[in-house]
Length: 293
Image 1 (cartoon, helix red, strand yellow):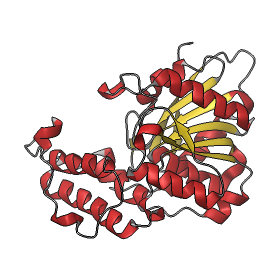
Image 2 (cartoon, helix red, strand yellow):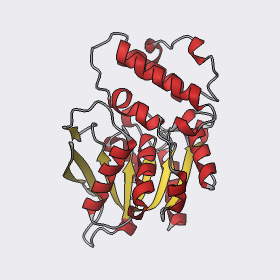
Image 3 (tube, one colour):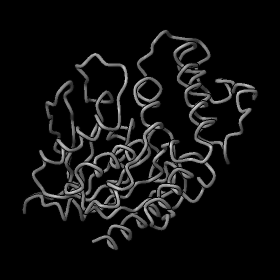
Image 4 (tube, one colour):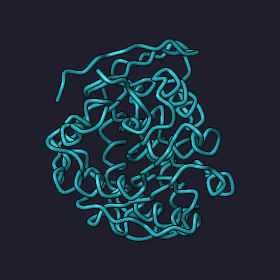
């Protein structure tokens, strides 16, 4: 794949960085653009997946407050609406017309927020495991467990907070009303630090967690949008919070849930030390995007 061209974009409260890969000698058009979006995961997480789309102009970016995209607003929280506005500005800066988007995790939540308001910018959206607990039948218990993750992080630091995040996000099945009576996971069991370094600026635990999982999609606006929306979940993720949320969103939109190979990070090929099934995942994504054209 061709070397990436990196662009910067000044937006209110931040400077965003995004990368463009692919042959642009004939110009970049929306029909050929594939935008890969995560949150809080930055562009580095899509290196393997991007390598499987040499037939497309691939765009990746670092969301506000992560990687190279620096915040200047002094705020401690980020909302899907803020991310959606950043995404709108990046797509408009491309000048390519409506684009195809694969969005993972929090990125899928942010893209749903964008399509609600600016569906004309997105031709096909593949929303993979958007973790909005608001759509779950057990949302009160799930949201309470997530609030406890944030409170633990603020009180005890990244190790205990991330240990609870892993336990909550990988839990199979609904959260019982007495979830708080369960013993807290040990950070050491996950190879996480047990000492508090005093920092409280983690992009996931500090900035994005509460607003992302607490987001309530506007289903009427999504159904009315011109965007072709595909809601997807990993085969191995069945029963987990993000996969259950994806299933509920698909039902509310009146579409079938599309099952992708592997798990929540099935497209990863060693990024962050994690492995999915990237080749099979990319084949499935090619097929879905082809069907959406």
